[in-house]
Image 1 (tube, helix red, strand yellow):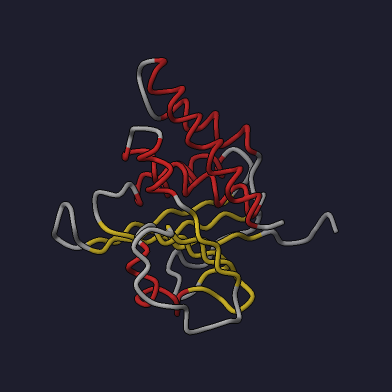
Image 2 (image 1 turned 30 degrees about the horizontal axis):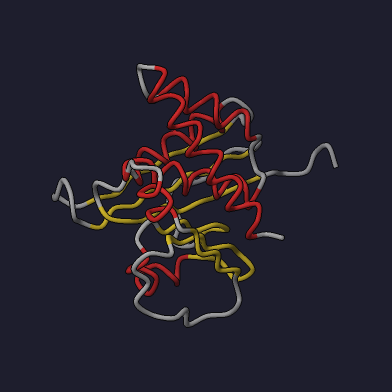
Length: 186
């Protein structure tokens, strides 16, 4: 088993301004600590905010042939209203994590695990809507266990926030997400 190829691929999608690309960068930076090969590929329109955006993150112990993904093992959708738009992008037997706010339609497929995360609601309850992306990132880590909780928290601490208040808020957001993601897999 020591020579087994370990590869994780993720598509993160949402609306510009939601922190989708930052969450993807944070995941890639954390993965760099444990994996030799990591790619992060953003995709977005000309709008700064409000347009559809996504990124792919792939991390592996073997070379990555292409950073492009039509489908991924895990799909993280930051805007509930985009369930139908992105549902085709998750592999059969994969996982889709989606913010439970504003889901307007039912899933059309049943061959993957759908996990609804109240990221926006939780962020508002904590008084800071800007942390919903960290809650979603934490939920991914909690649901999949692909990287250690501590590694992701340390990566967020190192790369986001200059003051202790912000760093503590970010740490709490990741922890909340990890709990939500872990609980969803029970």
